[in-house]
Length: 304
Image (cartoon, rainbow, N blue to C red; front, side, top):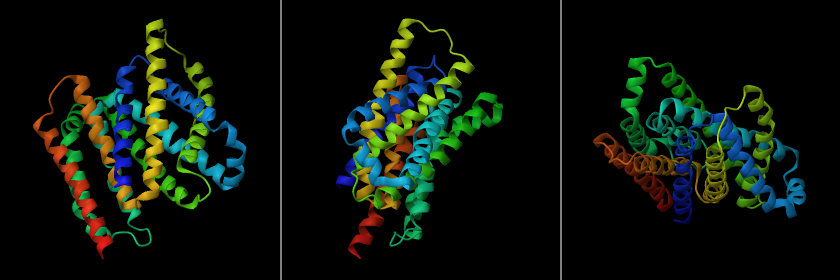
């Protein structure tokens, strides 16, 4: 129950990242990525500075390599593609494609030793897929029918984000199992420091591309959104996620990602000041049923 509670909390905080591109829509995805992760890196560095050298010594060379690629897959690359997908394809389409994360992670996790057999997870995976289709089928249909270049590029970016974060979720969960001398929060802070360094490397790229003119109010909003998302989603949300990853098997970790989708939709409805459609209500029901079915499969495994 503690692991499930941490998964719900992480989803509630991560759902905020879908709103960030809308709140600071006057900035490009690359600028949003740089702003969020420089703030994340600075916060993480302040928190971990007193024990940074000792932790780096403990993780060794392989751990440093893992930090580099996990930071890229789970943060830098993922958030850039997600921001681009939301701005060009919309929240609904992006939520649809990202909503298939649980399917990908659960299928990979079913290959682990002593994992729940995939056949017992099929009902949960079908419910998850059905919920995702209910969320965004209209948006995808409009993109394909209209051949809108922006929408098609948004779909491609969302698919790339799906692949990137699947690699992160699986790799991060397995590294957390291997790390016995480092706490889950310290691992999160180490990833934050590495992500901040990567964001700094992107600053020259943004300057070469060119930064549009913004007034003081725009920059104030940018700083507030970047700092807020860094603190809530990256520091607090990642800490809850890492704690959960140590408590739950990978086949159940995948289902916990659905809470991000549920909360992202809820925040989207509040932002757009509207009630959900019948298809969206159906999606909520299917996603909740998917999580329930997955929990039932794992509880049955525990009893056996």
